[in-house]
Structures are given as structure tokens and as C-alpha cells.
Image (cartoon, rainbow, N blue to C red; front, side):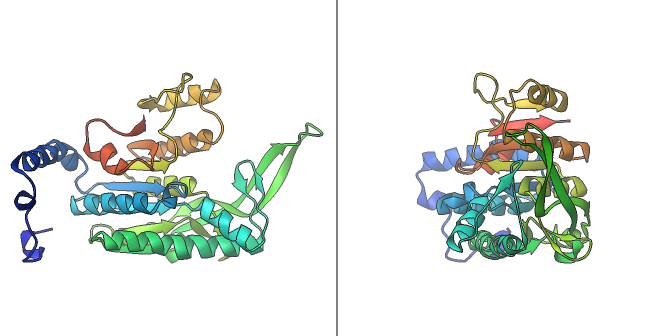
Length: 311
């Protein structure tokens, strides 16, 4: 933002803060400069999880981070989830949620609610927070411009009674089969911030619910993003002693999955990271989205805020 665009009445930081505080602020900015130069004009895809979105102040902090990145010359793309919010709406409407292999079984009635919540209330709420922080956010789904086309997902689970593996029909749950970045190419670099709901089109024009991590990984890979940040409700990947692992290679990540150190819901997140890296993303970070200004801590400081996985 140029000085000419500031309101004439806007006070300077120095006029409001003691000189010592002003010097501290200047040091912070100088320390951030190399990081800002590193990400200048780069694409950063940020997946914002539904669990992190439950706290309004955290959402406002996140919106400020995204606007600051865009003002600093970064091209942020936001992908949001909404699992808890979808679950709450389904319960309110008396529709029972069922899960298999970690994914919500999505019948026709459920997919209509999923699309309403993700593309409606959640998407527009996040757009509003970003716009309120001074940005220009644009809410979209994967269906817009055929950005993301998905195919039906099937999963195999072990029947606990018979101990026989069986295929589960997940309904309208999809995985990206193709990504067309035409719409995003027209948006990025024009002071606009795309905010994407993980709803995809089927090849027949229908609707698929896509896991938000998977959706973000596909978008980041297609855009050749410099970073993909997966904001969740845990600090990152933990070792056998439950301590944060700061950095992993793809080989190390696969070894930790094989030996059981990475388990449960962290496995699909790490697999999404590996997929994105193999598609050309430079680095992927899993971090706690409930930490205030986690995005800025990760990208614009020396300390980082989660687990970085590199090619």
C-alpha cells in the first residue's frame, strides 16, 4: 500500500507508541525483510481447517495474516474446511453423520447441506473477515470455471466382525482428477485473494465433497506453489516422544508412517504433503492454526511454527 492511499488522519506508529516500542517494531520489520523477499510474487496456498475456524478472534487473526501477505507481495490462495460446522448443521436438521476410513459418507441429502455450509456460510464468513481486515477476497468453489473436477472415491475397510475387507460406498465424496487454473490465473497478482470451498464438479456436472487437505494439495500442485500450509489443531508432526519434528524429507516422512510414528488422521495429511511435493510444490508445512498469527510466524520469521516437509 502506498503512502498516498493512507487516510489523511491516520496516525503514524511512532506518534502513538513510545520510542522504544517503535524501535522494536522497526527491528521486527527488518528481520522479516529477507523472508518477504523470499516469498515476493510467490504463490502460497493456505488450508484453513474447520476446527481452527471455531474461534472468531483466531479467524480475524488469520484474516490479518492473509491480508498482510498479499500487501507484502505474496499471492495467497485460501482453501477452507468446515467439518465441525457441517456436522453441527446436519445434527440440527436431524441428518445422521456416518464416517468410513476417516471420510464422511455423503448421500444426496448430505451433499446438499455440505455445499450449502461450505460454499455459503463458511466461505462468505471468511471472505468477510479478510475484507474487514483490508483485503479484497473473492469466494469460489472448485465448481467455478470447472476449476476442480473430481471422480468418485471408494475406500476399503476391515469388517470387525468377519475380519474381511469390504468396499464402502462413500456416496458423493470425490478426489480431484483434474485442476484447471484459468480462473485463479486471472485473479492472482491483481490484489484479489481467492477463498476456495472444497466442492468439486463431477464429469457429468454433479457435485462432490472433497477433503479440504486433498483439495488444497491439488490446487497447490497445479499452481506450482512455493508453499502449502496445512493449518490444523495440532502443532505438527510429532516424534515417538510426542515432540515436534521441525523438518522432514519425503523419505523420512514415509519411514515414520511405516513404523507407526505417524498414525491416525496425520497419515492422510502427510500423504497430501507428499503428493503436493511430487507435483512441484517447494515445501509443505503442517502447523497449529489456533496459534495467533501462525501463518506469519511460519513464513516471515526465523523460527517457523510447525513441521516443514521438503522434497
